[in-house]
Image (tube, rainbow, N blue to C red; front, top):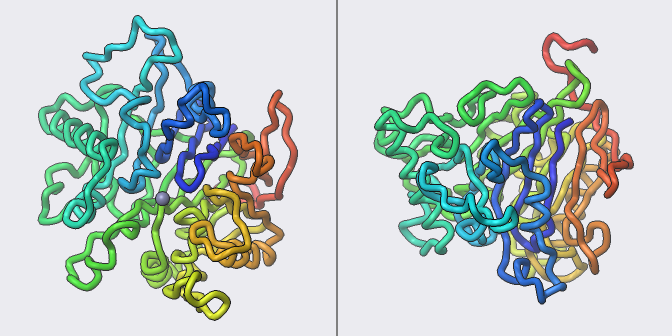
Length: 392
Ligand SMILES: [Zn+2]
């Protein structure tokens, strides 16, 4: 069955999707492995690298791998620890085969990267070392592809969105355009998932380009993940990095009349449950007088019956902090109240003083929290819409 794991990484993202195909294909969205999480003498921060490794497959050579690593945008809280835990470089030169399993760097079979994200970032913002390393590796893979050498595990790349000035016009078979739905990963069609890319959006208007920098360049993508039961409804998982109010307003304007684009059974609350994804006003300045953007809220309110919203953030307190912001949590809870859904926070799961990865299992009609030892308990009913052609 498909499983989605949210790792407790404070205000940052690290989300693993495992599909229901026989190979249990994996898609990792972002990493945030802090040095303190790797420090065996620091028991105050969860060892999420070990948590991740226990959930990954090993290949025929004994190397841990993910089928896909997608970087939503190159902020540190989305790529920290990448170089330390993942192998970046030609797969033919993989250097860790003689090391114990726990020290082998994780192979990324296919990278999903947005060239626009880096272009929008690099003008005004200094990238952290891990972001630079990721960008270098994505570019290396594109070069390999151009030379006809990119079609193997550890060398593949897909570009999420086009680059400016026709720079990706010769790469059509590895470019996913916004608004496109695709069903392949790591070089092959996979019948257990689809994904619709919604952003970043390529735009020439100078005013809009200015707004689309930084967090607003995040990849916004809506996955459709198979249930365990063949032919059963899929679960829609909407993930939007740190996209803020402007992007959600744009997406609502674009997809208001589209029944599926923004619909979700599971939403990762954008930007660690930030108020800035729902409003132009400052929460700390205006408090309860801060106004909600109707368009952004509408875009983020396309919850199906029994939907779950997960904030990947610290514990959410009733204070002026943002993110995570208590007012944003309340807004999401009001969205979920209308559909019988549930709001969860990685910083509070299972308890705020002792966190564990939040494993959600997708099966017909529900998302369940997977408990240690293999059991599960229902947290919310999810009535995923039937796929075309599937029995009602
Ligand atoms: Zn972030």
